[in-house]
Image 1 (cartoon, chains in turn purple, blue):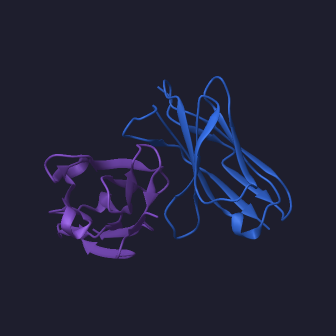
Image 2 (cartoon, rainbow over the protein chains, first blue to last red; image 1 turned 180 degrees about the vertical axis):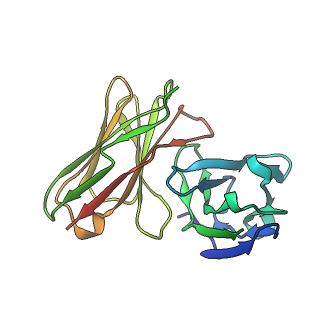
Length: 113
Length: 112
């Protein structure tokens, strides 16, 4: 069975600090990788996705993620966070089909102004 | 263009009761997936419907069942509710074989 691990459950940063959220998955085949964000009071929104090609993908709001196949990782990064980035971030994986997602347990990011 | 909508927003039930949750997909989408998100956890896949049939199922008991209507809207039914069924239930819609799912706001179910 596939699984997704997010190592940081709660991260607190000051504005302008750099962000890196870890995500590791367990699956030996070809995977599609996603990061979703859930802002307070809002529903899950797609931040970025990786299917193939350049392992460094860029998403909305200045976020990027790097797929490292040898490490089964898909870490999310942002050079300089803003207070408005306060949210919960979920890494997700699917394989063999496009519609059955496996989610990590999420990382709550709190950015202090 | 309306996104994914779910009803009701909140629901309180007692153990042993049955519940029905509803989802209307984003306009133009034909596939609906349901997820359970327990407190402090990520969403867990329950099942997916396409062309009014269950296409895939996660590791959930038969107490969880669903239906998709000709207009692509969907229902999630849970029988014989347990305390552990308390969670946020998310609906996501997409086009079949699409790479992106759009999530609704969820229904918060509390089982007492």
